[in-house]
Image 1 (spheres, rainbow, N blue to C red):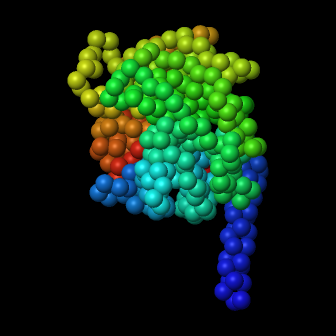
Image 2: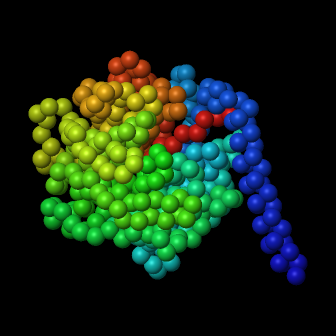
Image 3: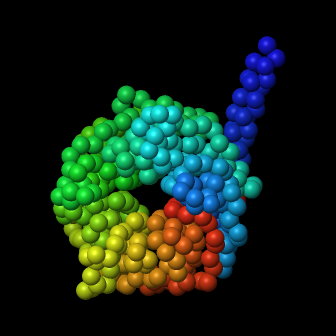
Length: 401
């Protein structure tokens, strides 16, 4: 009896703590208004912990939003291969994939929910759920904050999970999982589907899922309240491109896909009513005339600046960030050049909430480097600030209160 009481008490304590953290975060944000853009910002790094990388999970640090100086990262939470992270849009919650091929003897990875201690930046584990397929490589939270979306690279599938009131992840529903099917032209990498990203449209009506193995951006109908997705339509990229990640423009009228295999970026006009995609441009992530055959190059991440004026993409092997300006009327890109990341194998990178700094994760150099963004030209300049992080592959910011 006492053991049962103790377990119940711990559960009640955990829920009460979660409620207080969420309430404090919300009230502080409302009362402070513009002060949400504080002088400092929390930043977390997803890593690969398997394969003798020296990583134990998710690491956290603080960045100063005037100088770009970054504190020494510390372990915020132990986790297995937390390669990709996502933050809740309004609550102190962080979600991480566990990018593994099997879990408890089943061909699936996992997704873990964490509370964020906004005083220390440490993460408190809530619960986890299977990802529904092997090698989950991407997780995002829809703008309404009701569900998460996950892409399983190894399993070639996409999944949606509901978020409970206490921030925990609910089990997948019958309508929350879609197995992709098909192939494309590259026999080595495109014999089967490989979902590589999953994000919701700004109004949470659709989920967009680039699939590297299909050369398609799949568009699923999304019901966040029911944590359900349904096959609907798709947009195409050139055969052999290998679409990897996608991001919307701030106004939601366009989206940009970075293609891993051909080192290109494709721009699509997006119809918010129908979810339809219409390609309007594709161009290289490398300087004109630079050869890619036999180099082992590939792209990884694409990010649109909060102002909507600039776009950036990472080149692995070439070890640079490609820079573009965006025409405000047409959405077309103009190539500005590339900036070396001062490290190796730039996987994910992110721009801080003020739009001043870009942090690039160098997976191959175990480093995160800080660049200042010129607000007029969009070009990057290395600040000299670098942080050591084992096998970093994802960067996520949260404004300090």
